[in-house]
Structure formats: C-alpha cells, structure tokens
Length: 249
Image 1 (cartoon, helix red, strand yellow):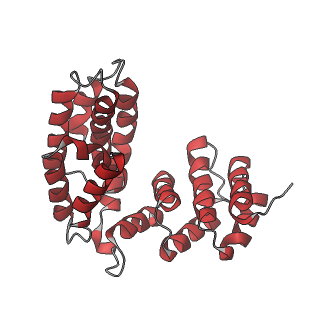
Image 2 (cartoon, one colour):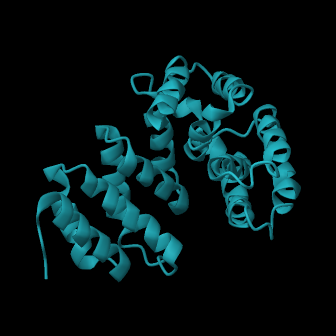
C-alpha cells in the first residue's frame, strides 16, 4: 500500500518536474494539500529542501493541522501525518505560524515535533530564499539538483549539511559531488568547528562524498580522516571503510 501511495505522489510531482518558477512549485503543492490526505505525508517530507515560504500554501497546511490534530491522536498513521503538518510550518520559515506551533508544546502526541519546528523556523527563514533562488539555476540540470547546488554553494554550514544529506540520500550528480568536495576541502580545516552542529555539518559532507563510491575522492577522504577534528575524522574513516574497503588504524 505504501508503494502505491508513493507512486501516486510521484506521478503528481513528475507532472511538474521542471517548474518554470517558484509560483509553479507553490501551485503544485497547493493542489496536493487541497486534495486527498493520503498524499500529504510524502509531499510534506520534501519541504525541507524545496525552499518554499508562500503563505497561500502554508495557510492550507496550518488549517489541516488545526482541523485534524485532535481526531488523529489515536491512529498512529494519522498522527504522523498531522506531525508532518507541524514540521512543515517550521520549514515555511514564516514567523506568523509560531503561535500555532506553540499551541502543541507540552502536547503528549505532538510536543517533540513542535519543538523541532520552532528550531527550524528561523533557519528556514534565512534558507528558503537561498534554496529557491532560480537566478542561479542551470537549465541543463533538474530543479532538485539546482536546489541542492544552491545549498552547497551557501556560506551557511548548517544549510550545507541539508545539501549534503540530499546527496547522501538521493542526488549523486557530478556537479554536486564536486561542490561537496570543494566545501569539504575548505571546511575540514576550519578552526570554528567547536560545536557539535558545525562539526556534524562537515562530517555529513565526508559521509555524502564517500557514498558516491567515486575513486577520485579517496585521497581527499584520506586527508580528512587524518587531519580533521575527531568527529569529522571518524565519519571520513567510516566512509572509506564502508564504500572503498579502506581501513585505517
């Protein structure tokens, strides 16, 4: 059943695979969230890398959240769908939704999702214009690849981490791997990786680059595994072992 739902969502998304503008993207999602609820969870899962903030769309998501939250508590799948509405409001980056998100703090079923959404809100307020900036899009590349490229080109380490995760879980395009390699080469030697979030961002770059299984990046990963901070070194070593069979002491 899950496969059927995922396929249905894919068919809806593929119709708009190469959107001409951000407005096209917004209209695609308005269509989805104005329609059958069984498609909402998969669509909501994409908001973290779409770069959308339009209140016409997220007002619909907010309405769904407020209408369905109480009735969905006793059904795990339905509760997870509603939790995704909460996360989506965080991904919108729109502070107008903060009061709605805060209503779910302390709620046994939704508290942890509300807390993460509140953490996401200020980040995506900064990030969404960068992710969705079509002036930097290469028409030869897919929209998704262009969005990830925008993330990786940014100066924000935490946004770069979102991009690295997209490479790890999905996009292995050459341009993204080259951008990752450039960022990793620069970032691993930074002296400001003094908190776990920033260090973890660089670790994800090593992990994502290794997942390409491309031999051209072995030397860089070996360099990182020897010279980076402990957290980044560990992930570089794990990538070398997992994807290239190279184990170091």
